[in-house]
Length: 111
Length: 135
Image (cartoon, rainbow over all chains, first blue to last red; front, side):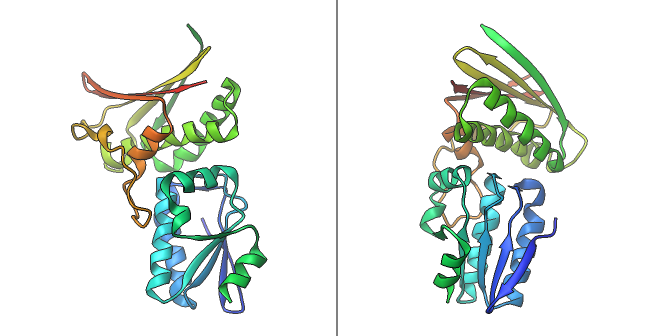
């Protein structure tokens, strides 16, 4: 699995896949870490397509946040659907990530 | 009274979990769960099977796992069987969700949050996990 990735004004944007789960977790974590370390530690994750996430997917996102914050950066999310939103509320992940409705709002927050 | 039943079989290969997720989600919706509830119960089942693969079979592929789906008028009952060594005693007692900054440890808490009943038994050489969601 190769993430779609682009950079805008020094901010990395990654489009996450339909599912973020155990099979891809190690690879996903490594990709996000490499993007953060190659960049400025500012990452926006597009969850528009992501309809399913398990505990491994949660761990992948938390790991990327920790990597970013060690660099003095951050990870913002946007495009969250109802399934992932419910999971974030259950796991309280919504308390540690900044979550936006759309990409432009996330970009504004990162600047 | 059981109104429908389906037996799903897979090997202990994480790459099979995507197909299982699609299949189970469709069964949940067909049974009458609305989208978010279907996703929740599907998540519980995927977490349970992932635990079998990761912890039971130590990530080793090629071992059998069965998911027996039974849908009655008022509930869905799932029975997940594997032939891995038994899990630690009381593993279903880990009801508390870890802190949000934890990278792991959410699986059992998610299973319990997304089911109305969950029980485990060792029957012969098999681990048998039963999960129920009311309709």
